[in-house]
Length: 443
Ligand SMILES: Nc1nc2c(ncn2[C@@H]2O[C@H](COP(=O)(O)OP(=O)(O)OP(=O)(O)O)[C@@H](O)[C@H]2O)c(=O)[nH]1
Ligand SMILES: [Mg+2]
Image (cartoon, rainbow, N blue to C red; front, side):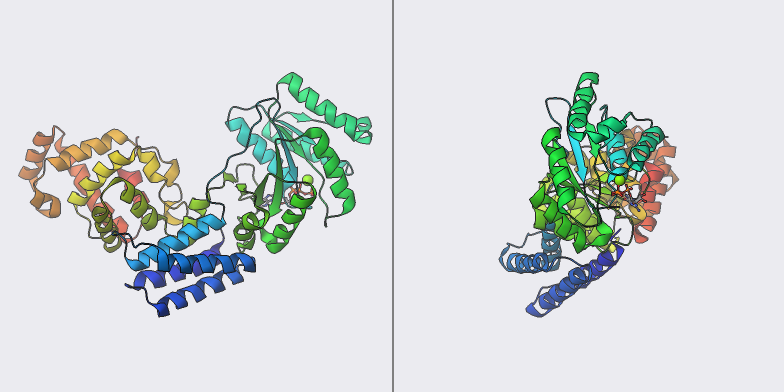
């Protein structure tokens, strides 16, 4: 996803990481690289300008955190600003307290409205809702058929408009809402017609539909592959009809990123979901902060630093980051990490810190045996400091002593050591995931 932009930005991050201190010269160089990366990704020029000004201002102004090197500080600022561009906080869909909630999807032709109706319906069903699909694409006879097929594929209810209803849409829309209300359907998900270009007739029709439906959300569906065109049409839909949120589709393709990075700023509306494939499960809530980390490829280091900063003292965070980077990780560090994990709350929360791409792809879906972690902690507690720093000296008799001291079995001690050595190897290859899945998964 957004590979080209991501590669370019990661290059800037690597450049900054390599610079111990920040000087006017390397800052200017980094800014130039960032600007080029954004422009090449087709980001709106006003967004680029503002981004640049803010990063510069913050880099000069912001107090350097004790636990971060100046270069890491700049990386953090870039991450923060990128998150801001993408919309700051994750925003979920609004549901109405008076039923039914109505989601009306609008957008140009072929952007993925109808597909997204199906994805959205499936999504709400997972929230224990009872969605109803309907298409008010009034001109195209095939529209009813297409929606019906989606309903059948997903095993979801679909309201089919009759010929007479299509001829009298105002009345029909009232009937649909009444039907949903009577039968307890919620949300009502309404697909609309698309056009190649925005024209007055379409806008008129959509305004009429909107007035009668009184939707909880008017969701603009934009094709991320079309870059600034998606942004411009979003702006027009916002002006002429009024939208409440955005879904960007086709982010799985070779979209350059310009739409994602400009549309929130230009329309002032949040991106709530992204489409990442043609199938109905290729649909994700949009988290600006995670997306920023994902694009920068910094999820591992930045988030760990930030989270640790909150919970532990800053020196420790710095040390941990340094060791993670240099792979000088001992059992003692591992134990400290376990203590911090407990402070941070659940492990699953911790796992969310990892980037969702690359070697970490499936990490957030892992099921973790938290108990095992605490057994590991008990085992490490029974080791001497010397053993923690240099676990290679832990021979058979030491293993027995540690097992007895911790109340765990020798085979568990063996398992911990084996996995620790494996983890060190993995971290070298930056495949932390393997360690987690190998050692802490519940079977
Ligand atoms: N790769 C990819 N393809 C998508 C995504 N969303 C939709 N598509 C594809 O885009 C094409 C158009 O999707 P539709 O849902 O028919 O688009 P629409 O906006 O309803 O089109 P009109 O009704 O003609 O205006 C289809 O081939 C979809 O499979 C996505 O997130 N990723
Ligand atoms: Mg359609």
